[in-house]
Image (tube, rainbow, N blue to C red; front, side, top):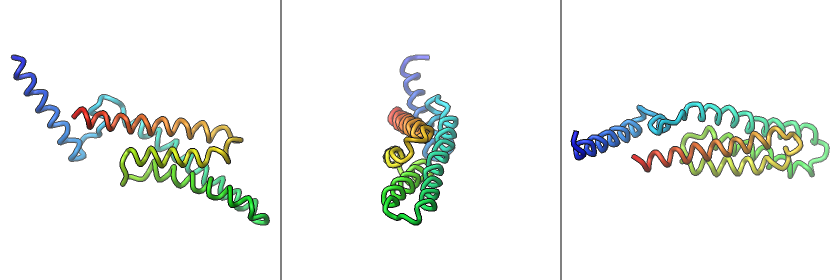
Length: 146
């Protein structure tokens, strides 16, 4: 095949890929050749663990500290706010990838200080932020390449 025909063929394939993505027939990560499904599943599982864990720890602190409401001014906004932001960033489908990264990062930072003693939640929070960043970069790179 001549070089001109190959270039036309590549443009047609790129146009077809973009049309499939816009129609929702193909996931963006599939086009990039990356197993985006595995990364998305991991992001959702870890996001549910981190977000749910922060909210449950906030409920536990609320129940334990009912007699002294002063410390609740620190515990409730950081735990419930951080958990809510993480869950919204992971499971909120209405926003962009940038917004998802911002929400997850802010939620992880809010929940970091009160859960440092658990060791598990901060480590999972960092892993979650990295997963969300990777997914965001993969999505934006594929869209730019198309």
